[in-house]
Amino acid sequence: MSSIPSRVFVSRLAGLTVLDPQGDQVGRLRDVVVSMRVGTESPRVLGIVVEIQQRRTIFVPMGRVTGIDSEAVVLSSGTVSVRRFDKRHGESLAIADLFDRSVETDSGRAVIVVDLGMEQNRARDWLITRVAVSEPGRRLRRRGPITQVSWDELRGLSLTQGPQGADNLLAAFDKLRPADLANVIQDLSTKRRVEVAAALDDDRLAEVLAELPEDDQLEILQALSGERAADVLEAMGPDDAADILSELSEAEQEKLLDLMQPEDAAPLRRLLTYDDYSAGGMMTPEPVILPPNATVADALARVRDPSVTPALASVVYVCRPPMTTPTGKYLGMAHVQRLLREPPSAQIAGILDTHVEPLSPDATLAHVTAYLATYNLVAVPIVDSDDHLLGAVSVDDVLDHLLPDGWRERGMARVVTNGED
View 1 (cartoon, rainbow, N blue to C red):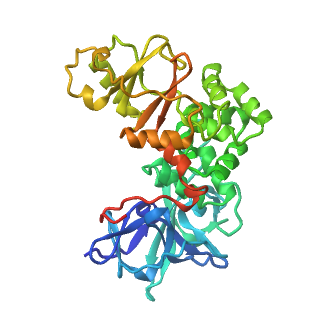
View 2: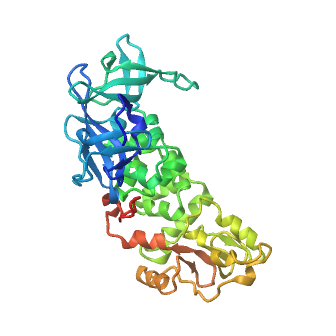
View 3: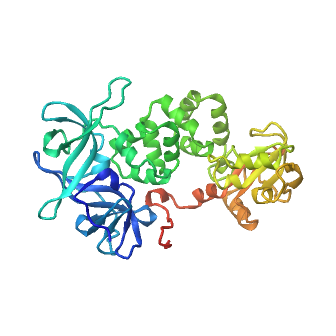
């Protein structure tokens, strides 16, 4: 059984599995709740924030923690309150609120909070006693070496928040999937959410934005400069970017589209002409497309690209040139399962599935859903009246539109390691 070390640094806890006494997973630790106190008194650690099923975050009192090691946090009981965690007045989240804070030492030296060390006192209460800090970088220099100081040696760690970076918060959650990082961001204050978004690179922010509710997407996008917002939209999948743009006024849409590269803006302009709940409104204009003389080896190399979603990677669409949508004449589709059974040198023109009729961009959500279910497909091609491929609708696009409004705010069911849904 895990024991509790004499001192624990908070960054080491982020993302750890939380287990019950039997070793079954309760969830994952996302943050530590502390109670700020008057003057230089060390904050008391109240408990941990644990993400459980359906992305719900709950509070577990620190007294329930019986073991901590490099792999997991162990609780004294598997029975926990599933009431959603809400930060109360006077409480702070160690990672979300205190990491990256600019403070001063007793000597007046400006430093940045990098990590927090907590330990138990004789009364078995957990307190934040040590703070890892570094000097701010100057010009092109990175931050200085990390040193440790006592909590009471610092000035500026209080409930009033000044400008705050996000480097160390993001480092703590660096390995999170975009959907999980989006869930963390949702629980931050508006101010902190904007700071974190500003610190993410364009590709990572694009991935996270796609997983956020519409209100949060717009809040973050509108807080960015026009040029940065355009760069992030370019990094997003065209269907996701078009969904965000559709929530803006026509003037705001046009302003951002004009700032984008013409080749990136063109597919978004096309997508915005379709109804949200039509095949055209749901499709991505960037499926995997190859000419008929491409080989099986060519096709498999394309679907191995990690930037292609699993649903889109299941099918290769074969068209005459040009190979960007709208393409030349659509000829058929090649299923990856079939490609795996063919010689690498074989041309894909000889193994096309021509029995799947493509749909028009005006097909309704109900029609697309029934079509995918009837033919056991995970994606379906969308063509215009002249059989030019416009894009593809995948099953994940359909699910986004079938789920109730606000589903991202409530979270979606996910499988945990003990096999329970």
